[in-house]
Length: 265
Ligand code: NAI
Image (cartoon, rainbow, N blue to C red):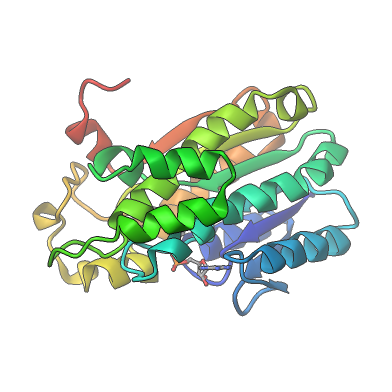
C-alpha cells in the first residue's frame, strides 16, 4: 500500500479523493487550511514551504503520489489570491515534493485544473505568461487589473480561468522534462466541469436545486458532477500502472467542453 498526499482534503473533490485512496488501503496525508494532517495556507510562500516540509517529514521522505486538488473559485473577490492559490500553490507543492515521488520509483502526480481554461472566453495571455515565468508578484498585480466589474460576472473569472489555463500548460511543459519524465514520475491534470461542491455552490448559488438543463454551461449528460466522479480519475492517475500517461489533461465535465469546442481534439 502506498503513501499519498492530497491537498484540499477537507472538502469536495479533495475529500472524495482522500476517501477513495483510504478505502483502497493507502495512507493519505491531507493538506488543507483546516481539518487536515498538515494545516497550511497554499496561497502563501511560507504556507507552501511548511506544507512541503511537513508532508516530507510525515511520509519519511518517500511518496507514491500527490493529488494537488486545493483551490478556490471565481467568486473570490481577491483575484490576486485566486492566482496564488490556484497556480502557484500546486506548482510549488509539486516542485517541492517531486524528489520524494522520485524516491518511490514510480511517483504519480495529478493536479486539478478546470474546463474553464478552455470554455470561458476570459483567459488573459499576459497573466498566463507571468504565471508560467514564475513571477507571482507580477501575476498577482495583473490579476487585480483583470477583475470583472460588470454585474453578473464572477469578480475573479479572468484570474480563475487564466490560473487554470496556466496550470494545465505548466503540467504539459513540466511533465516532459527529464527531471520528471526520465525519473519515473508522471504528471497529469484533470479539468473538471460543474461539480457539486461547496466551491461551486459559492460561485453559482444553489446549483443543486437548479435544473442541469438550464445551467449556464451545457451538460449533455443531464446532471451535475459529483466529487466522486473526479476522485475516480484522481485514483486512476495515481496508480502504479499509469506510468505511460504523462502531460495529459483529462476533461471530466459531462460533455461541456465537447459541446462548446466540438472541433478541438
Ligand atoms: P471545495 O471548496 O469543496 O474544496 C476546496 C478545498 O481547498 C477546501 O477544503 C479548501 O479549504 C481548500 N483550500 C482553498 N484554499 C486553500 C489554501 N489557500 N490552502 C490550502 N487549502 C485551500 O472545492 P472543490 O470544488 O472540491 O475544488 C477542488 C478543485 O477543483 C479546486 O482547485 C477548484 O478550483 C477545482 N474546480 C472545481 C470545480 C467545481 O465545479 N466544483 C470545477 C472545476 C475546477
